[in-house]
Structure formats: structure tokens, C-alpha cells
Image (cartoon, rainbow, N blue to C red; front, side, top):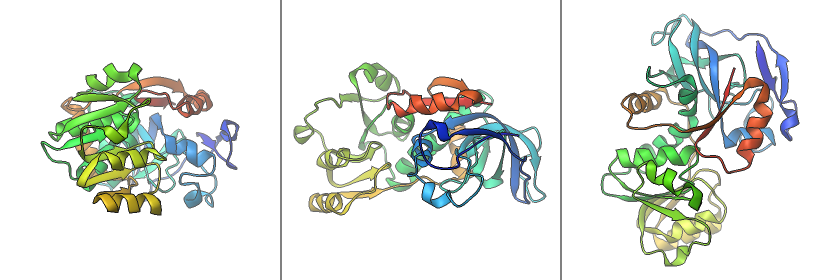
Length: 313
């Protein structure tokens, strides 16, 4: 089968095209013929030697990627949820070795869901890691309730554009940040208010939020704490909260912590239901062929993408 391996961390030239042996599904696994792959910031980070590279670097061949949508090719003897020919999608084995940059991928059946018929394979692949991150952050960790005020940073991005919509689905009042050029996109997602993050005076922000989802990290965590009310929650996805930041959060009475998404088929089913009912819609900025995975990585590295980047096999 076609696959892309990484032999050592580095730039996009470390994405090496090869032919690998087609994997076989074990008893509780599903073999998926992949149609579409979603590319995420963690793919970039892992390729250069950070992200989850330390967790999986000993495995060979190292194949990046976690987000897939495709058709079930075969099922293990113990699999009961899927059959050959089913269209499925999911995030595979995160934060372990997903091996998604390949023509065929094996996944535990409890990490997949049936693809809604009203969305494409590209849209399905886009609605995996990013959508799961938003769902697990808002629903399982922050437990966002109707009437709460929440702030979503980088609201035009992969995780952000799902978080805005899920926040509205939960009945929250949502403010999203982005550059001015993406204001209409963010408000079009259903956000109640938009903040242009360029030169914004966070110290004198008039509102205090019950929950802030930080998808940027770095100094943005400090700004997030400033605008979170006492007893509120700040969840940071890309950066662990260091000791100094945690202390600032405690001084204000804010609960600040780092969060890492995990593969979960039951959560995927909930996302599938939202997509099926058009309560959440996915934005795909560009679709690349498998032969242009390097270009997909380079586009994502610009940090200027709106929605998701997809690669088709």
C-alpha cells in the first residue's frame, strides 16, 4: 500500500513516500481503506520532533496522522459495530501511533463512527481530532452550560470553528477571536461577538468569561486568565500551563489546566449526530492529493488557515 513515513524529525522533506505492507485487523479492529486524511498542527509538531514524537519515535516505520475517513475493507472476529462496506470516520489511537498517512489503516472499532450520509469523506475526515478536541474540552472537561459566557481563541481555526458551534449548541454565549479578515466567518459560525486579537487591550476587557478555550498557547494563556472570572476555567490545548501561569490562575481563583484529546468512538458518534442534523458544519479550506502532503504541511505551518486542510488518497 501507499504510505508516508518519517525516518527522522525535520522539515517537510522528512515525509518520505514508500510502499508498505498492508496491515491486518486483529480481533477488535477494523481495516479501513482510507479516502481522506485530515492534517493537524500536532502532525507538524510531531514531524519536527515535538508533539507526540517522544511517545512513538521507537516504532518503525513511523507513520504520522490520526484523522481518517474511508470504507471498511475488513473486520476482526470480535467486531460487532461495523461491517465490510460501511463508511466510517474517526481519530485513530491518539495520542499513540495512528499511522493515518497510508492507503489502509487499522483502528479499534471503539474509536470509529459511521460517517453521516449528508457529508463528504473530506468533511468527515475534517471532523475528527479538531471536533473531538472541542467536544471533549467543552462538554467533558469544562462542562459548559446554557447561559454561560465562553471565549474561543483562534475561532476561525480547526478546533476553534468547531468550539464556537458546539458552544452555541450547548446554549452558551460565545465570543470568538481571530484576525479582522475572518470576522464574518466567525460570526457566520454563530458566535455572538468577535474580537480582533491584533493589539487588543485584554487588561481592560469589559467582560469576564466562565470558560476560555486557548488554542494558541504562549502569552495567550496569561491573557486568557485575565478575562476569566473567579471560579471559571481556562483550558490550554497547545501548551502545558507552567508553574508561573498556574500561580497566576490560582491567585485569581481560576482553574487553569492543559488538556489532551483522546480517541473515543462514543464521542465520535455524538459528533456524527451533530453533523447529520447540520447542528455543526465543517469548513474545509483546501484539499490536496496524497502526492502533495508536503504542500499540505507547509500551508498549515503558515498559521493562517481557516477551518481544515484535507489530503485525499
